[in-house]
Length: 163
Image 1: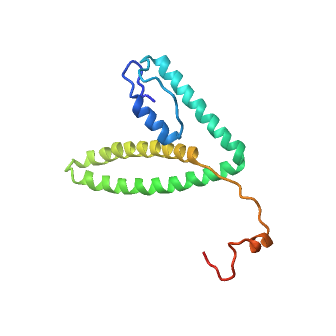
Image 2: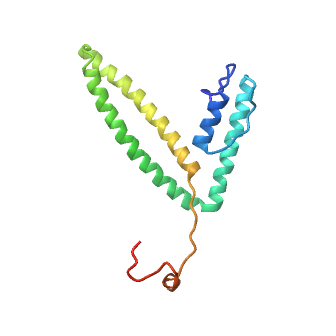
Image 3: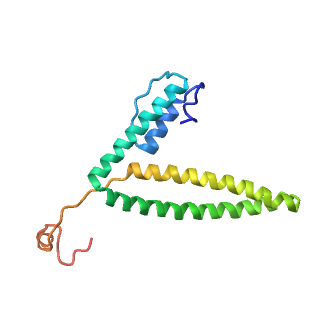
């Protein structure tokens, strides 16, 4: 929010709208020439939060809290696995890059630590972003139960038909 609507600064309404639509999949009506004070930015952030909370509560009501929690845990574990692999690759690259800088020995470890922590913070920010985006896009439907005999009677069922 601070990036798109800084208190006392010029708001990037188009960028904020695009980000909200991409990450949260919500349409938030905003003024084309918004106020630039901190109160207006906080009010907009609260309105976006309330809309996102209502959207997620609708998912909980539709899917069920236990099912949604299980699916989100699985999504988060897959994201941790993916982002951790990417982080390991970035750290290997950083290790080579710092080795090529011809720094004194006592500066190599300190420099690596500083830059590795910055990469970790970026990974954590990406994780929060991705989890939020996946959670907002998540949609499950419960398929009606079909008995084995109904499946056999279906026009799509043919012996030897492998689709």
